[in-house]
Image (cartoon, rainbow, N blue to C red; front, side, top):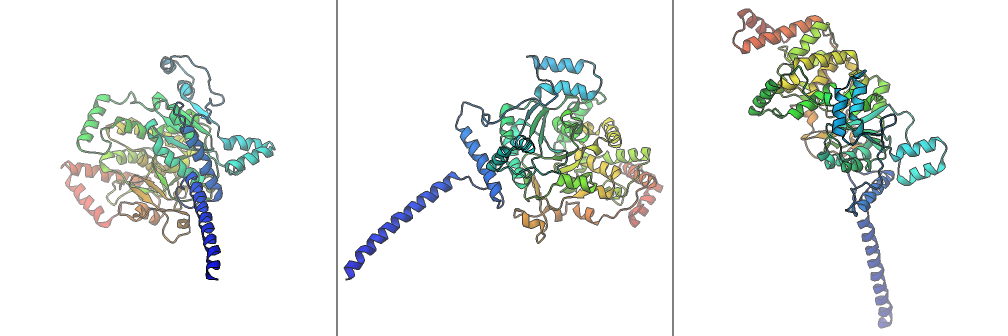
Length: 502
């Protein structure tokens, strides 16, 4: 009886083993075909988005004779822009720059037109068909994992100043930005470069988003040394800063970048019909899911400038920026309700600023006559080239002068990293539950952060008298540093240092 029972048991065991082995093989095969997830746990819709993207890229990468990603991307011209150009584009550009024009915008548009390309994303194309009543487009959008566009989108774009060699660093950033936020909203991207974009760059970027993408070259006037700057003196200044080990002290291109971001990017012809921008840089990380629209929030709440990281500038890069800013305020009789955020007890610039590699802001504010006048004043002071003024302190000081305290917003719910500086919402907060933050110190609470000062800031009127007094203290300290400060100034400075007020 035992033997009769054992035989069928052994057979059953063998059948079970074979069945289990088949299940394992099938599961492993399915897992191998599925790409690894990136970032935090994502919705089924987001997972579908990742699958579609990765499979398309992998299939196109198999053909080494064609530029990667080129098969499914069509590049064309922007509506209303020129479409035909001579074969010698360099000669064409030189001729355009030397010809008279009605205004700078028309000149710049004609100059860069041969290097402006546009890709209409699937989201925009399908949404237009849906708005026209097409049910097939809605089915296709669902098949591709594209979320239908919200109806209250702001007139906004991501703005990316980038070089061709930074492609792969940006693709990683773009994937995070799409997965965390833009897959729900489909805001367009605008890429700017002082050199023409390569086909590889444009096709790769366009293939990694369902949104519209525009690539444009920067006009020569926006990325060159102006005539009123002595280039020989500027070169010596760079050599001296490089010898002292100042970060980017010897770089001319870095100075072009800072000047461009301070006073020209918002004048670029491809951005003239855009009201809001989100600046994005290659290689940065986004740690948190955003289930709302920050552009619409800024627009609807009356905000004009925003930030996520506040820190101190390198003093050796802006030795006279504060002096010129105070002089500008004095001459224009500018008052503020929070300029004290940037002032130390001695009247000096405390070096606090909002880090501009992430900023969401109003282009209308940057295009205002008041901001234009401030930038022109600084530009003619030549500090972008004789020193190394950054666009971050320029934007920050301009906001302190020209905006009200409640027009500037800190996005506490956006986790972000640039270089070695990372910040995330506080542990235990509701915002933190939507984040996958790294196990490293939060810069918000580090000694170098200016965020605590921002949170403790109370509105206080900054008058013409405050500006005049701060400028006087700064100049007296300059004299003290050179050993020629008059005795009465020494006593007055000690008095102000003791009481810590003007």
